[in-house]
Length: 427
Image (cartoon, rainbow, N blue to C red; front, side, top):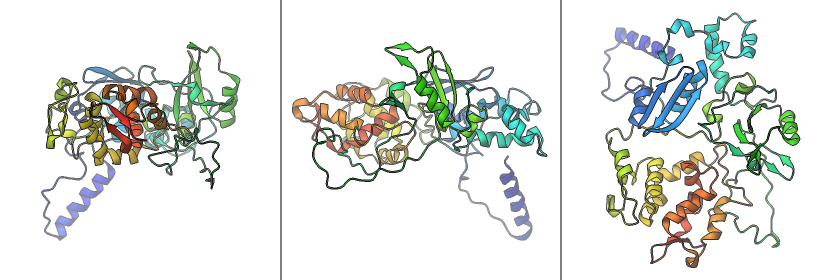
C-alpha cells in the first residue's frame, strides 16, 4: 500500500465519525485493487520467468526479451509495464524471491556515485532507495558522462546502423524528425523540384534534445570495427556522453541515470518493443489464437459490418491500434486496409507516437513515405497487397509494428486499389 492510500483510508475512517458514509458500486479508477502485473502479462499471452539477475519474457511461446539488471530489474520491468497500463500491483524488488529486509538499501547502493552523494545526508540506504529510482527514471540530460555505461543484452535490442548517425564526415545524435508542419503529401518531391525557387523559406525549428540510450552497430562492409573511429570518440567527448564499446557495438546515452551508472530506463531505449498491455480484451481470450489460425488469403471471410477479417475482426471500431495493425499485416487486403485507414485508434496512436525517440521516418527533405510513393505511384506501378506490406517493411526504419503504423499513416489517403485487386498510390 502506498502512503497516499494509507492517508485516504485514514480520512475515510474520520468521515465515518462525522457523516453517514455510502460507497459507490463503481470500480476504483486504479486497478491496483484487482490485478497484479504478472496476471496482466499472462492475459496478453506473455510468459514471465525470474532469472538469477533479472527476468525473461516470451510472447506466444516466442522469445521476446531477457533483461539482467540485478536489483534494478524489477524497477525496469515495472516502468516498462507502466508505459502501456497503470494501476497494477507491480513487482517487488528481486521479484519477491528474497526477504524484503535483505533488499532494502540495495537500489541506492547500485550506484557508487549516488552512494557518495547521500553519504553526507542524514538518510539511511533504505530511505535513499526512492531517490535512486528517481534518477534511474529521470529524463534529465547531462554532459558529465564517461566510459562504463551499462550494456543491454544484444538478444533483446536491435542495434542501429552507424550510418544513421553519420553525415558528411560528422556524427550527430540529434533526432532530425519530420516536423509537424509536413502534410500527408509531405515533401517527397523535394529532390525533383530542388531547382524551383521557393516563395518563402521557413525558419528551421530549434532542435530540442531528447534523452536517449542507443545500441549502435559499428560495422564497415559487414565487418565489426575493432576500434571506435576518431570522429565518434570526439563527438562522445564533446557531448559528455556515457558510453561503452565492445565487440563492434557502441552503447551510448546522455541521461542522468547513465552518468550515475544506472541501467537505462525503458523510455530511453531506442528499439525496445512496447508491451502494449491492455485489459480490454480479457473477455475475448481466443482472439490471439484465432489470429494465428486465421486465413492469409487475399479474400478472407466477411466480419463486422461486412469488413473482411482474419480472425481479428474485433479490431474494427474501438479496439487498440496494435490489433488493427496485426490484422492488416497478417491479412493484407483492401478491406483490412480500410479498417486501418478509418480507425480512430490509429489516428490517436499516430499523434501519440509520431515524436517517439528514434521513429524519424525520414526528414522533411527525404521522408521515407516518399520513397514508397515514388515506387508505386500510378496504376501502372501497382503491386500485390503482400508485396505492398513487404515494401513497407523494407523502407521503414525501424520496421517494427509502430514504425509500420507511422509510415503508412503518412500517406494513407492516397492508397487505392485497381480493379484487379492490386495496390498503388494516386499521388
